[in-house]
Image (cartoon, rainbow, N blue to C red; front, side, top):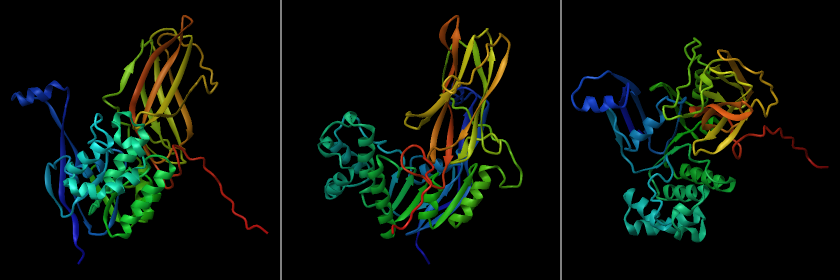
Length: 406
């Protein structure tokens, strides 16, 4: 019988949702308030054997990140039992424990100590860490002076070179440039050959299929299925088009409560949606599939030349792509007070699998002056699920021919 490395029994994670922030304080003072409970995980049970590579897949909000945080001890479960028999290294939020005022070298010792290593144990791994990060003399400079690429290289190098018995990876292999990504995947494969236990969460279904022995599919906080990668990927694709139970449902993207909103509101974005290739509202899109960004706009004043726009950022805030009706040379007629329009941007999803943020905007000209009427920055998340990731931010959809030379 195989040794169990991770055992989860009936895990539950509940969060209290308040109507307004002050209700939390009022409840702490003993005042009765209206509270709703949200189950991020509900009766989740599974086991991971020593030496297995297990994939965890699911749409945004399915409970993947919550599960990993419980396993790594970042948060505690509300109910259920979790047993972890081996030392864990987690590639979740790279560099989360770094002190920006410290040098790279000081942060290596700081992070190593936080992971439970002595100074001698850290020094024994130092050459491997420095070689893997490959940032040269910058290791002796404060990390606040690093580029984003140097920062993630060092953070990844520290996390990957402490010789963990269980490695937990959450969308962290595609960091840095193409050469560093290749090094990350080689290290991942080396871990597999050494018989390490790996828990792997990714929206890159190609990597899930390639590396994993078994896959768990989470959906709305419950385990929807468990089995070989092909079976679970096929079931996941049904979930993406809301057909896992034979019934097609509509899923409205949850609005980010921390979205930045501003403008004169002479024109106001009153509603928005992301639609998949089948026209279902969702925030999970399959790579290389058509999708549509829609928004409804109502006019509270006369507007001469409204301009509609959307942009997509990565989770670090870098703008990846976007467009507007002016760039697309799609003329929008002047609008009168009280009028309303729906604008739809239709395109193919060429971005790599991963998590993104959507922003919307309505600008234009009022009395001859360019004016921001309404902007919604980071209004909701957008998940791209991929069966094949290439290099960089987007896929050029290359078609390859190989011929023997005469």
